[in-house]
Length: 302
Image (cartoon, rainbow, N blue to C red; front, side, top):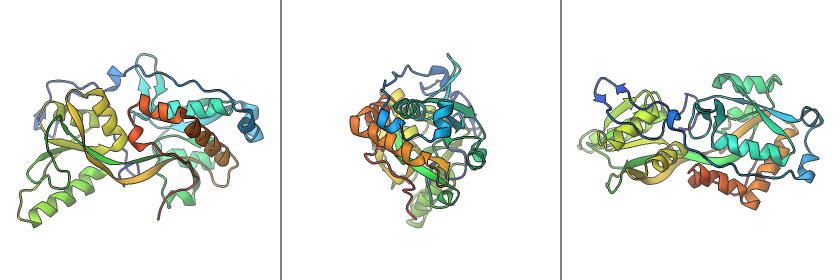
């Protein structure tokens, strides 16, 4: 599973770097934090019936304390112009909080410390593109709100088959499952069939991988589906998605095991899904391919 299932996920940040001593990138894509686009906020109203279900302690505080790890564009990252944490996850959590008559108080934390801090009561909820999986469900409950997998991108008009990219240069972010699992397996299938291996070009961050594709220095890149969608939206005159999303799993917000807050957050997300605001937020960030229509608690499949 690619999406934050253990290792750090994909990061869109400064794009002009040297990677692996091989590629010097001379141009920059528009998917770095220094070029964050203006994204309109979707305004939502408090729903009294849902707000009445908020646990007393949270209601009294008037806020959701949210543990978040950044950067992870477009889901959660810092806007350099305002120094605020922004992104798809942020806009959705803000909308959920408003629906419940609350505000969201984002607390930056190391990714691996968020779930233990929820268990300890430091945070009410985590929001960091967590993959809901059965192992994590043993420790916390997850309110599922999105479906993410892996997806390739290619230059506009190209014809690269993600399942038969033998002999092609494919960019990935270093240490991700695309580098460690997906591309090696696909490359082995090539060599087993007596075809050329895939030339896997690893970068220290995802923005550099996208930049290499824009400049034509690689044939494709593979990344998390919302990250690919965001890069394409930012550079739609140069690159496009390639093939379907695969290896999908739900993103979920972790809350304390058995917490009464979980069903309330689930109901608020479902309300936003039903009235169309959830879809608008997805579209604003270019991640609508991963939009779902039903929020559940602990929807991981074994």
